[in-house]
Structures are given as C-alpha cells and as structure tokens.
Image 1 (tube, rainbow, N blue to C red):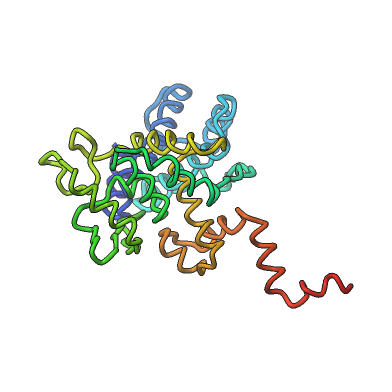
Image 2: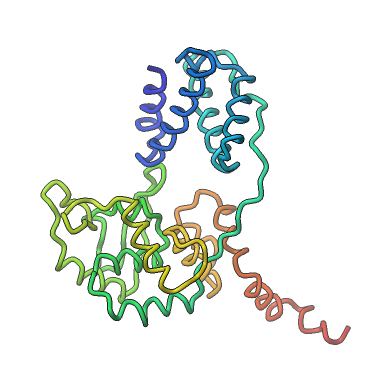
Length: 296
C-alpha cells in the first residue's frame, strides 16, 4: 500500500522519530476513512482539491481545532509530494490549499516561585525518586517528554554533568545538567530495576519497563496541580518554563535554541514573548532613551 511506502520513506530516508511517524499515520488514516466513506474507494492517490476541501469542512464541523486541521493538511501535503516525487501523480490535490488562520493560545509558563514551591514544599515529602526525576529533568533541561522516555543509559554521563539527547530527525545534542540534578539522578540509579529488554533505557517504571509519554504526562499534571491553578499543566509547560526562565536570567537566545533542539530561531523566540514585564525591565535598564523618559 502506498501509505506504508510513504511511512517507510519517513522512517528510513527522512529519519523521523517513531512519535512523528505515528502522527503522520493517524492523520493519513483519518483521511483514508473519509475518502472511503465519501468516494467508496481506498485509492487516495485519486483525490482532488474538492475532496481535500470537503475533508477540511468535515473536520471543522466536528469541532476539530484549527491547529489539528492544519497538522492533518500538512501531513497530506507531505504524502502527495512523495507521490509526485515517485511519479505516481502529476499534480498535488493540496496545491494552493492554504492552512487555516488562527491565533495560537498563549502558553503561560510556571513562575519561578511556583517551581521553587514544588522543590521546597512538595518534594520534601516525596519518596518516589522516579517521579521527582521526571519533573526535575524536564524543568532543568527543557527536553521533550518523548526525549525523556527515550533517554538511554549510555547517553547519560553524570560525572561529566552531561546528557546526550536524540531529538527530532534523530538530531543529537548535548545538554549540561547541574550538580544538584546529577545527584538526584545518581540516587535514582541506585533504585533502578529495569527488565532485561529495557536495560538500555535510563528511566523505567516500577515494572522495569520503558516509560510511556502518557505516564509522564500524568506525573507532571499531578505535581503541577499541587502548586498552580494555571490551566496548562503538561510536560510542554515545563519546557516552556525552562526556556522562559533561562532567557529571563540573561541566557543568549542562540544558546537556548541549541539546548531546546530547535531548527529555527523563530521557534525559540516564542518564549521571549512570555514575560513582557521582563522585557520592559530590560528596556528600562538598557535603552539610552528609557532613562530620559521622565525628562520629556
């Protein structure tokens, strides 16, 4: 089936992560079901612009978010570009179909005080080292939950204070860790009991198996619910908080980009918008005109 060939291409040639490939598969399977329902056919290579537009309309009517619709449309674009590349079609049905415009929901990071409260008030009574490590690693390194689940034992050098992360597109990056975090991780290693087939993974659950992203989400949500009333209490918010806090303390945005594993500086610049008060403070301290405002 052409869908399987496309997914194989993403895995072997584009070297996309299993998580990304799963997302592509889900998006394309949703379209296949729609095409089968409306056209009584499984050959989506025959789809035209009208069918793509009808698919978008149905998604909207089912209250699928514009962000999700755009992701599905992006998956379809990639699929039909692949068919163009191998000569199966002569024109893409997604050509000239624009993504939906929307204003992304503002992500509000945890405050530094909230994260300090987590350390001072919550973690003092926490006996579960694994759960503490999950929160601390996500907040102190800014890595993605998928990257945390995929951390391997051989890529963690606690003596050197470094973690090698395999990110999107199998790109590698080295992330420094504090002595405090290294000490917590060393304590966890003493309690770690992986099953034979999961020995290569640094973090394993109580059954000795590799962590799932769902488990990580549940743990993070549980602890953040104890310190904040903010709506977003996900692993990504800890990544957002990491970036915001280090930028607030003067870290160069290019260095933060490298740590986060962003391919584009624009992705990192999102976090510079998180704290307008900090930006105002920087302006008032640094701009030559700022100190003269009172004299105007």
